[in-house]
Structure formats: C-alpha cells, structure tokens
Image 1 (cartoon, one colour):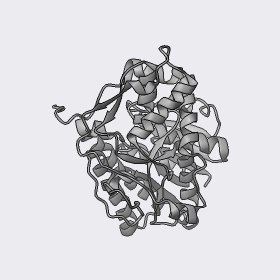
Image 2 (cartoon, rainbow, N blue to C red; image 1 turned 45 degrees about the vertical axis):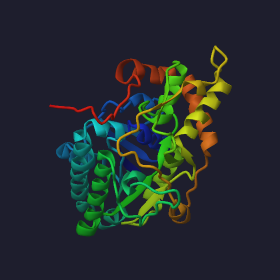
Image 3 (tube, rainbow, N blue to C red; image 1 turned 90 degrees about the vertical axis):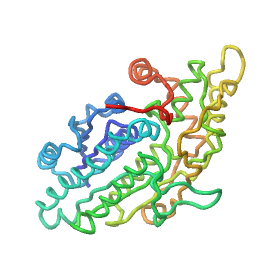
Length: 357
C-alpha cells in the first residue's frame, strides 16, 4: 500500500488516521473531505506540509469529481471515513445522514468500481476499498454478551440506520461486482481533536467553563471506549492484512457507564486543573432528559482483529483519558473557535424538536 485515499480525513478519526500514515509509514495520502461543520483542517497542521500529503475539497457524492481524483491520484486503497456521525443531530434532522452515509457511499463505491476495473491484473488484485463503520449498527445489548462480526444488524437511530445501510451497500458491491472490500465496525472513539458535541470533549469543555455536565437519563448506558490513535493503527492493519469481504470489529475492551466516564473526567480535572472554589467538578453533574431510543449497552469482541490482523489497543481507558484531558487543557487554540463560532455545547436531539424545510 503506497498510495491511499482517505475520505473524511478532516474529521476526528480520519485526521488521526492521516497523522498516523504520514508520521509512521511511507504512504502517500490524498485526503478528500467536504468540510462540513465538524471537518477541521487544523487537526492536520502537523502533517500538512509533508510532500506525502494532499488535500481535495470534495463531496463523496460528487461522482465525477471523485472519479477524476481517483484517476489522477491512482490509489492502491480507499479508506472511507466520510460520514455524518452524531446520533443527536440525526434525531434533529436525518437528511444529511441519508445523503452522505447512504447516497454518498453509493457514489463512492461506483467511482471506486470504475477505477478498479481500469487497473491491470496485479493492481486490481492488490486494490482495497475499506469502509469504516460503527458498532451502533448492531443495536443494543443486554447486561451480558458482546457484539461479534456475525451479530445481526438492529440499528435504532437515524444515524445507525444510515450506517447499516452503507455497510450493506459495501457488502453488495463485493458479492455482486467483485470489488475487493473490507469493513470495520468500531466502538466509541475518544482522544484529541474530537468535535465537542461528543460526550468526552463536551464534558471537558463544559467543566472548564463551569457549565453543567449533562448526563442522559440515569447515566447507566454503557459504551466500549477506544482511543482514537489505537483505532487509526487498526485501520491501516485492516486494509493491509484484512481478507476481502470480511468484517473486523475494533474495540477497546473498556466498558464504562456514561456516569463513570463523566466522573473519571472530573477526577482528572480535579487533579490537573482544580476549581477555584475548591469543589470537585462532580458537583457540576446534572441528569437530563434521556436521548430518544437510547441504546442501553454496546460492547465489542475484538478477538478477530487481534488474531487475524495482529492488532491490540495500546492505551487503556485511564491512560487515554489522561492524554485526552491534558490535550484539551493545552490546546484551546483548536477548540475555542469551535465553541465560540460553531457549537457552544447546547443540547441536541430532543424529540420534540423538528427541522422543517
């Protein structure tokens, strides 16, 4: 793998992947990103001057532009991370999720299929289309059990439904057309450069601004947490070592309730940046109306990725969280413009809110 296209490379996971590829490999990268509200090229400042990095401002749904980019760049692989990802936003207004996650994936698949079909026999054999998805497509677990690659799909939100649909399209393109695809489904990512609509950065920044720390419902919903740099390494291993047509679940083996996550953030901040009044940040915790259709528990069995790809998470939840909190404390120049101009931390996804054209 010498030349890789990363779609959605200005996003949270995509930018982590590109930083890994430029810093730790000899791969040449073309980043294709639409630059929606959560796309941030400042997340790539550390690699943007590399002669192995290129950027194209484009929508994956723009098939002619994508087709031209593939023809010009001549990639060995495409890693598709372009997606709308926030469940609460999908509850407010689902159309962008349908447009990008389903229709956009279709157009990208078709552009990739045409490019792949033009390759010589050896390059055609080596080419890969890697689609990055989520554990949310599997629905909700009870108190026990883990998601495996054979767990039946049971998506519950507009977001997870759109990702499930895109997964099915990708699988169909390998079975019907022979396109060499790989799918990975990951658990909840966290780490530096995450847009502050997601739980961990939202809580960190709210705490620093002495705002309430919202916890949905009773706070007992469980997620498996994965440090984003570990995920980035898994993605590159998957595209290099994964078997065509296979799915690999990538998880951090770090189940926590939402309340435990928020309390752990408060403990880190209590140590690293104590409040002026001497109280714990836990005093800012506030239980709020639950998310509509809130899945109770996600947990991933990542043994297939460990056994077949040779991957394992290097960060524990505790070590990754300390790095994350420390990063937000020392990088206000990245997140402050977002809080001031793009997203101030207001509640999203309340069912009685409707978006009307």
